[in-house]
Image (cartoon, rainbow, N blue to C red; front, side, top):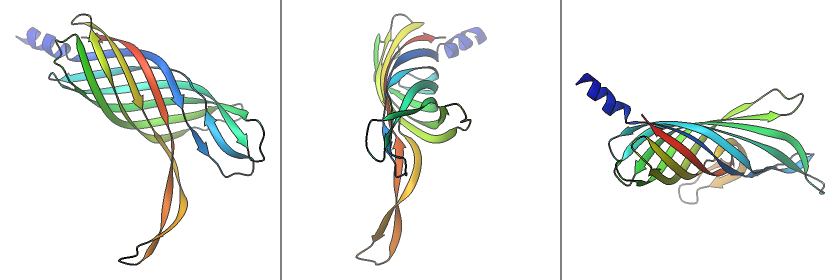
Length: 200
């Protein structure tokens, strides 16, 4: 009975290695040198380790890595210049909702998660990095070749919070009173990946 229970529990664990393409966004600046910075698109890869709770729900931890050049637009105009290469490591906890039982060959799913993104500008003389809050929203499909081996295709959007700047004042016309409102800035990342899944 103990061996049977251990085997049943083990079949709930999924490990996925994936690789794909990541499309990155940019950020408007108000500095003396540059007016905008854009992170270029690049290859991303990573690992996901998940635990299936019944047929339809799952929890997982996902790590994803992306390395991309970063271009800045000069404030006075002209061509963009490469300022550094940005190393990005995402660490996200996801909740997965499947739309088919685990025995089915094709299992569409949605995922929602939250975690942290570490941003490191890989440039000589720059040793600092920054860790920011990140969320993700995505979905895809799992195709099971057998009880142990499968293919996972997914797409996800993961905006990383960078900073809040003062955008101005807002006054309530009904109740009165005015207060400062902020403008939140995010680094938007969208990726499409394919991976091999092992279930234990």
